[in-house]
Image (tube, rainbow, N blue to C red; front, side, top):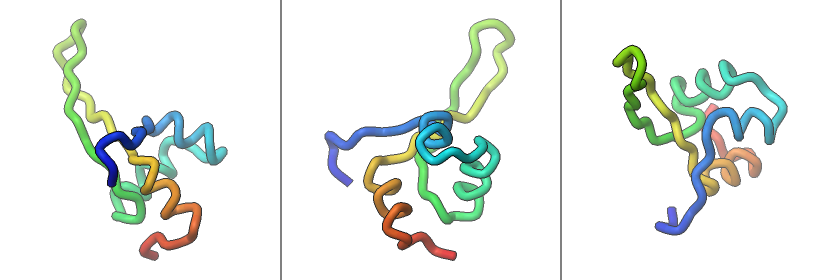
Length: 69
């Protein structure tokens, strides 16, 4: 993991691979796709949402088929 490595939002990953957000979130939850989770508070409701960010190297690992099944 390089400090200059690009991070992707879940939505960007879904657009790249043509799958749903739920599919990516399930892979993260099951540990098949590693992601960083950042809490984010909305200004309107003070509700906390989790923002997942996925490193480019993790996507490359996924493309090579080295994910843990």
